[in-house]
Length: 168
Length: 168
DNA sequence: GACCCATTCTTGAAAGTTGAACTATGTAGG
DNA sequence: CCTACATAGTTCAACTTTCAAGAATGGGTC
Image 1 (cartoon, protein in one colour):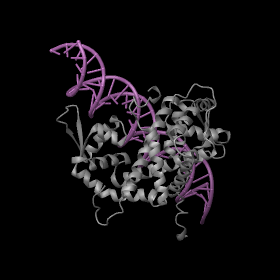
Image 2 (cartoon, each protein chain N blue to C red; image 1 turned 90 degrees about the vertical axis):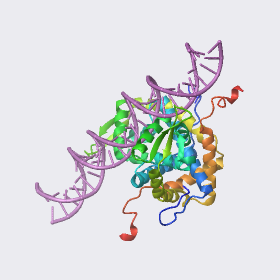
Image 3 (cartoon, rainbow over the protein chains, first blue to last red; image 1 turned 120 degrees about the vertical axis):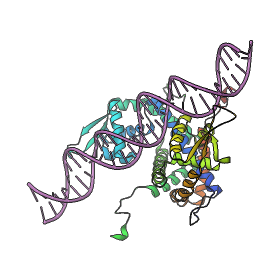
Image 4 (cartoon, helix red, strand yellow; image 1 turned 45 degrees about the vertical axis):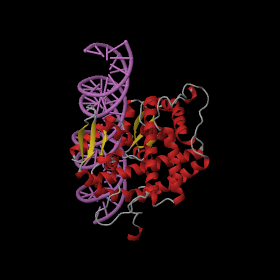
């Protein structure tokens, strides 16, 4: 992208920045692909679906409202609907009505789903370690955490209200 | 990934590591989603497709063999086939026969495709800056580059030969 | 209650991805 | 030349994701 813009010259990335950006894209896509394949092979589901089961396994009574689950997994409710339908077909998740809000649904992790998690978690953790924690120096792990927190902050979807305090 | 089937307790992530891992997943998915939406809106294609056009724009004669392009974009040839078909339908890429190898195909960026790139690159760079470079301290950018290089190294698809050093 | 709008979740169609099977061409050895 | 196998790229079916639309319930106001 070394060509001219239309009217105002944008602030292009310099060579160092380009290198960092490429490394970032390179590493993140390789890792996501790697985990997807590893989990597809060993657990029969993509990484995102695995993440849903993990979230559920850590929730009280191993269940969460759909919207809560969608939020914590950072996916749309639509996507979650499809995903839960698939996981339900596998017998790993069950939908349950919410008594206090008839619109609502819980997604609950079944014992069978929990079993899948128990069986596949070690391999998954090993893959994550091998890709990240076993290769980085302790201070790099710390740096990575700080960096990712800063980036997430800037991308966090905020309340539209909270986003415009000066208009209140 | 030869780690399954042994009975020793796996090395789970400790709390710090978990926090880093979650931050990583959080930030990377938010950023990828953000860029996908930004490019879908402004350029009418997902981030991966945009990356293909960028690769082509930097290649000699603005063209690459399909396999080369797939490699540099880290996607499968199958995925690339579909992607190029779509980009061709948009008029942004054209397929060309390879004279020296009748099995081969070049993907060439059209002038129209180049124009899309010129028009949308500024917005894309701005999004990347806003999410990453404008928020990180210079030393953090440097750290991130080093970290991502290390991680990519460990995930790089290697020669089968080179993959078995313990047999040498 | 009647009205209005927000929230929750689902659905259906289109777009994108995956993995395996397939076509066609190249390459090496006999 | 023939065989065998490798490589380049495509295609198909199954699956996943996205976007827009829709059904149902909740909550507020008059």
